[in-house]
Image (cartoon, rainbow, N blue to C red; front, top):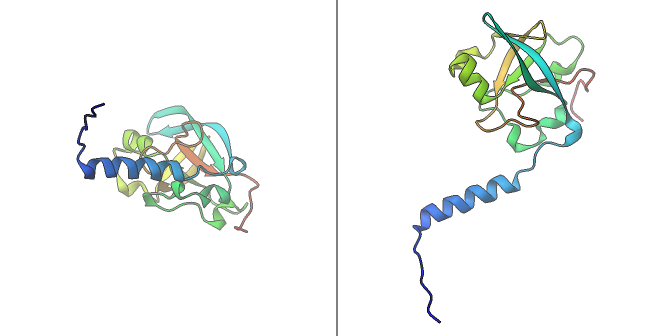
Length: 145
């Protein structure tokens, strides 16, 4: 019996395997750390209905939930005295704001409330349910355990 070997450049194969293993080994956030919701988001003169998630501090326990720009939610973002913050999906940020990094710290109207944009998630992150925006879950803990 004869075998034919197909040579794949080792570095390409190594990167593909490494990327596959890295994605498979990083867990999604715990299912009790978020609630899928739909929100009305106003950007300029346009208002659109978007998939969103209200999240608890436990949502940020997964390495996949680290923002690439700005920050995640802080303990004070969950309290009743919070002024309101929001994080954006990378694709939404690109589409609505043309990837402008200076939007961090500016306002976005979500369900009629002016919220401060504090972070942008990495490309491809849309958990759960292809969410476009994330907000702190109302009534969530005011500090991490």
